[in-house]
Image 1 (cartoon, rainbow, N blue to C red):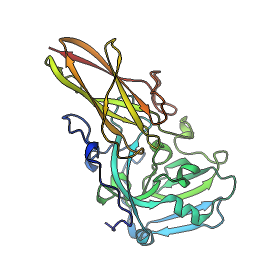
Image 2 (image 1 turned 120 degrees about the vertical axis):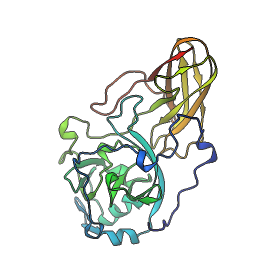
Image 3 (image 1 turned 30 degrees about the vertical axis):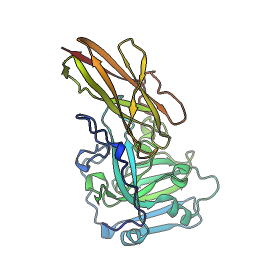
Image 4 (image 1 turned 180 degrees about the vertical axis):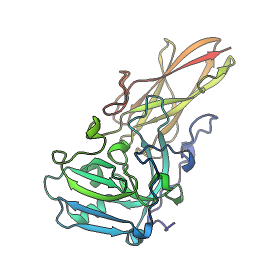
Length: 313
């Protein structure tokens, strides 16, 4: 692993609530969800890898593996989410990434006026349509070569993949990336947009209950309700929990790593015998409350509140 020129700040001590059953704030590589179109994981020889940036640019750019590793690489912690993640689902993970800012390579290529999209292409033919502003603003949109202190695993895109905070993976997280075409949404489409999904994929405000676990039967008395909430590149300011028909109660938030990561939350509960329905909803850093309107994952991500039935003996 190359040494980063810019290291990520240490994980804040208050970021991990250490509650049994609650998803850890950093997801281990082996536990990180995998969604892609590759029936067989591509085995790419890094010595032969290169990335070409072309299209609506003043100057085409081609960069190879050794040249990429020689650049000042940066560490950043980013939560990634799949657009096909149902409400309460587990197609989400948070990792420490090592890579080079995409905006720096695009600056070298000099996109022409009117370009509003970058079509990235994988070695297996998959394409993703990323709004160009998400790759050129100040967010940590990177070409990643490392994951949680290790070389990028093959199933997660070795040797190089894209990581873009704030966008669902289907429009940003191209693995085994070999090409970036600067273009427009009017002139080009991508793999999933050709199949009915929306062309832009900003991540929606969501929260999830992890504790108590599904199917658990609790004993009456003091317990805890806990979970995670996220809206990458916006941030979370609060989570509320409702038990049965009672009022919404404010949960305690852990310390967020950044606005680009999920955050853990918890609420103490005096459980009484019987069957209870528990709901949660998040509030983002802009003061918007997560909608309870239910929508499936197509065309641009699921909405609704995570609801869990809990039995107390």
